[in-house]
Image (cartoon, rainbow, N blue to C red; front, side, top):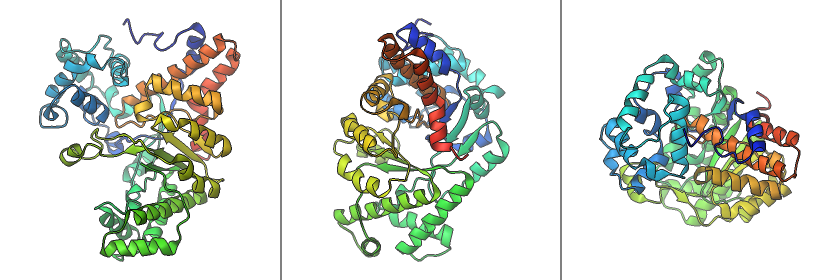
Length: 455
C-alpha cells in the first residue's frame, strides 16, 4: 500500500524509533460512546456498513456534504445500498480523518489494502462480510486483538448498568467502567426535563414527588451506585460555561416555578450553575475525575433533529464561550477536584492552557471531535508543549460510537505524538530517551494513572 504504510505520519527516523516504542501498547480509553450491550451479546456483525457506518455521524455528515440522500445514510435503503453510496463518494474524503480511519480499519482489521471506491465496493463488501462471520471478528475478539485494556462507556444516571455487571463477571481481559453523565437533569429549559427528573426520582426514591430535594437525593444515590460498579468519572456536555454561586433556596424556587410555568433564560442559567456545583461536590466526595466537554452547539441543523434525531451530525463548533469567567468559580472552589477539559473551539486553547498552569488540578484532554485529526492533534499537542507541560496532557480518548475506531483513532494519536517528538529530537531540543518516555507515558501511563489510579 503506497499510503498509510509504516511511514504514515512519521517524517523522520527519530519519529519512527519513538513510534516503535508505543505502537503495541494496550489502549486505555477513558471516554467513548460504545454500546455495551453489543459487547456483552458478542454476536457477529452482518456486514461492513453495520460495523462502520450504522452508528457513525462523522460518516453521515460527510455523505450529506457530498449530496447523498438521507435514505442512503440513515433511511430505509439496505446496508448494501448505503455502503455503495458511501464508497462512491469516499475518495472525495481525502485528507479528512474519516478517510484515514476507514482505510486503516480496512487494512488493519480486514487486510484490505486498496483504496475504497465505487469500482471495488462490491468486492470489499463480500470480503468483509465473509470475515465478519468468523468468531475472531466478534466484538470481544476484536477488542482483544486491538489490545483494548480499559474502556469507559457514557451512561445516564438512571441506567441500571446491568451490562456492566455482566461485563465484570464475564470478561476477564478487559475492564469496562461506566461514566456518570447527568446533563439531562441540569437542562431545565428542555421539554423533556420534568419527565426525566421524575423517572430518576421514581427509580431511586420510589416517589412521585417532584422536588429539588428529591432530585438531589436521587442523583446522590445514583452517583453512589455508579461508584459501586466501578465508575471513576463524570462527564458533562457544556455548550457554554455557567459556574457561579447559586443558593439552594434560589435553585429550589426555580425548580418549583418550572413545575407550573415557564422560566426565564437567567433562571435556566442559574439552575444549571447550581447543579454543576452539586455534581462537583459529589465528585470531590468520591474522588472522581470530572470531565468537561466544552463548546458544542447541539442540533444546529433543526431538520436533522426533527427527522433523524440527536447525534445525527447536526452539531457544530460553538462560537461564544466565556471560558475564563465560566471556569473561575468552579476552579476556585474545587481546587482538590481532578478535572479534565476538552475544548472543541481552538480559539479557546490559549486561555485554557494558561488556566491549567494556574490550576494544576485542571488537566488538558485530547483534541476533540472536529479536532481529532492528525492536524488538530499536532496543533493541540504542540501548543501545550510550548505553553504548559506536554507530559501533563491526558493522552487519547476515542470518543467513538463504534468499536473499530478504537485502534485507528489511537494509532493516529500515537503516530502524531511520535512525529512531534521526533522532530524535536532532530532539532536537538531533547534526547531520544526522554522523548520515548514522554511518548510511552502519554500513550499509556498517564491516562491509567489519572483515571484509574485506585482501580
